[in-house]
Image (tube, rainbow, N blue to C red; front, side):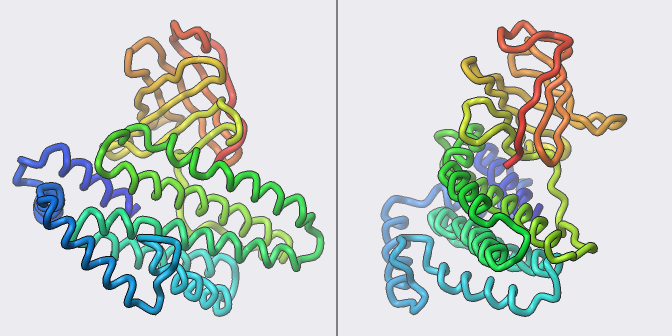
Length: 305
């Protein structure tokens, strides 16, 4: 949630950079956006110098200088946590720490580089959970690991598709990395739930609410539904991509009575109710002139990532 608020403030500031009411954060983003190329080059040179001198530096490239440190911190949390619920809570707190570091960066280049840390945190957690599943009786580890490897091949694809709103913008890369972080977090939650069941942790629960935002539909197909948080609280940006047909973009708001999302396409030619759950999403069409959807019909997108 903290990251979402931060990103919304950044987008608003970049869009309305002339508004003084945006306060300190907006002024900071304006300053970042207005930097001259010479200042950017000097800043980048300084950052590269610091990274090369750090004992934590990685050969992976810019933005990965905390990779080794993050892996050690995740290992420490896994070793000390009393159960999987506490473990996920502490991993979320670790994520918050690196989010704050990103928010306090002095340049947008730094922000972009530091945005990889959330992905690294949840990838390390997912890999740790896989290792423990490997040593747990009653699980078909080979099947789980094979599915994980196949899913991981599509993380970048899903993350890029989910950033369609920011295409061509200066923070698109940071948004893509945040989406990748979210995919690894979701996978870690799923693996933790599986491990908790096998270990008999009946009190296991997710420490944070997932909400309707997500990537729905099998990740390896071209049939998918994307729901992301909108600029206004309670609003969502929606992209529906039926396989073999044109994509449909629009916005949705939550229906207070049912909890479903009421969707209207940008061109006004389709409306529907979206039902989002842990294993997929449904689209109940109320009005449509789209070839792929018929009014009165319901369609499902199986899988949530």
